Image (cartoon, rainbow, N blue to C red; front, side, top):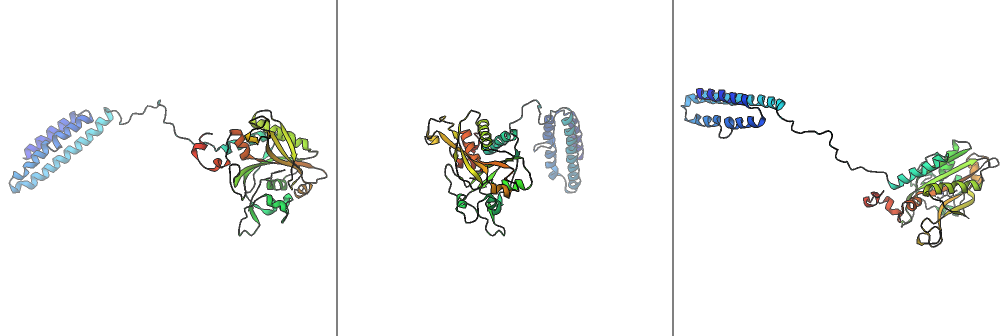
Length: 339
Ligand code: DAH
């Protein structure tokens, strides 16, 4: 028995040494150690040995098995290194799988455009808090407490705040904030998010974007305001536009001016988009009220200025041809993936 074992081990070792691929090695392993391999068949005969020979023979058989397994393992490492292709071949010239990528929201894309245009006109771009003191959102803008003008801005009040906090209803408060750290001449814009407590429909959202503008210097006139905004609109829509101005009341400007633009769709003939008027309302603006200039620490006898507030969402909708503001904030990928 022991003799036979030794023969098997010698034969197997020789065969293992001759195996040059993992495939061949596997075959050798099957031949000697597999279920019907030479070693198991021999082991099977253990039971026919006289009882006292069995323990020794069993131990030897086990040793033989271990020896062979080790030999196979060593050879395995050897043939793997020398002769076999690596399990996975990498072709570094093959183009990679394209990863799905996100992109900027249409409002963000459009805002960047707006900022770029004003930047090229020499404006500084500022930021301000979205949770604002009433002092800045209203009082310093000449919108006193209990004055009916306050009702124009449906306001979210921050409950339980020690200071009188609101979610800013417009970007105008940053006009005064900016002037606390600056002296004229200034040319600034403030793009940002604003909040109104109102029911939403295709053209109203409770949360939207405005871009405030403020220019203060000696000798600033209404024509500077009109020229600046006309230029901005033409740059934005990349075409010549006609504009018209209408008087409008805003407490922080005098005179207050609304600027309309000839309808982009019909060019002024009248269509559903402009409610047959040929005009689209684009900008609220005006000459900064002397009281507000004073609140900014600016002497209205020496300086004058103009201010404006752009509705970014409306402009964006016109620019891309979107007919419902709510789509912007819906998170609907079918909408967003079009930009
Ligand atoms: N803050 C105004 C609003 O939200 C828009 C506005 C109108 C801003 C006239 C201005 C301005 O700076 O001069 O309705």
